Structure formats: structure tokens, C-alpha cells
Length: 156
Ligand code: PNS
Image (cartoon, rainbow, N blue to C red; front, side, top):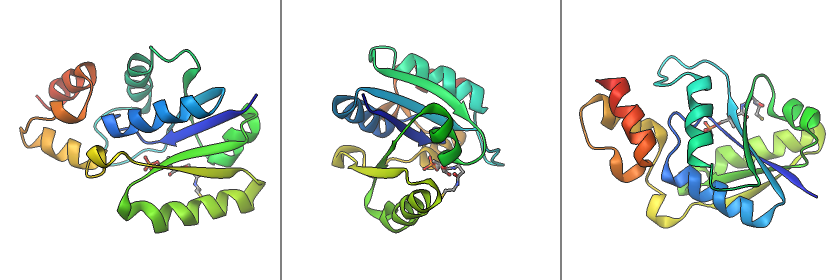
């Protein structure tokens, strides 16, 4: 039984994230989606709100649970008995994601698998979605209906 973590900020969760989580769930027995609790000045949602949004968005996947984590991801993995990190990668992410993966493996031996983002979502990022929402644009193509509604409410 392999437990894998899909870590991220998810501020907010996008279709690109959900595609990676769903494909990870097809490959591993149990997926823990882990929301980093580190504060960001530019955040739209609190980490606890992101957990609720992800729980709603992932409700149809029985092997997927959602947690909050603080501190180092590798410490969360050790505490939760997780041996693999799954990360979605878009074209521009590779260098940074590779160095994080190598560092995490160096820190405690947890390895990372990279899931290439579906091309239809490869230009989508939470930071662009936040900017579009704050400037009054339509974010509905990139988010579930529930998350889009939360996002519209938040910037209203
Ligand atoms: O959505 P993101 O920005 O790709 O998420 C990044 C996240 C939260 C996965 C990453 O910043 C992280 O793992 N933070 C926890 C702190 C940590 O372990 N840092 C060392 C990485 S080598």
C-alpha cells in the first residue's frame, strides 16, 4: 500500500491541480492532498479555506484525503508514513521542481514523481487566476463551479 502526497498552495485549487490529483489517484493506493500553511502576503484564501475547497472538489475520489501541513514537507511525509511526493509540472516549473525534489530526497529519502500537466491546463496557475479575479475577469474556465463561486465572492 503506497501513500503519496500531492502538496501545494492551492490558492485556489484549479482544474490543472485536480487533473494531477486525479491522475495520481489512478497510480497510487492512497493520496493525501497537503495544503502548505505557510502564510503568503498575496493569498486570497486562508489555508483552512483551501482545505474545505479541496475536500469539496475531491469528494468523488474515495482514495483521496486533504490535510493541512506546516513546516517541512518531508517532516509531514515522515509523520504520515508517506513515501512518495507527486508534483504536477508545467514547462516553466522544471528547474525549480527538480531542485525541490532533489533537496527533499537529500533531506529524508522521500522521492518525487513528476506528472506532466495536461497541455489544456499548462498555462493555468493560481497566481494568474487570483489576478484575473481581482481585476474582475472570468475565472470560471479554470475552476470548479464551487471554487469559482468562492473566488468571485472573495474579490467582490
Ligand atoms: O503550490 P506550490 O507553490 O507549488 O507549493 C509549494 C509547496 C507548498 C509544495 C512547497 O513550497 C513546500 O513543500 N513547502 C513546505 C516547506 C518545505 O518543505 N520547503 C523545502 C522544500 S525543498
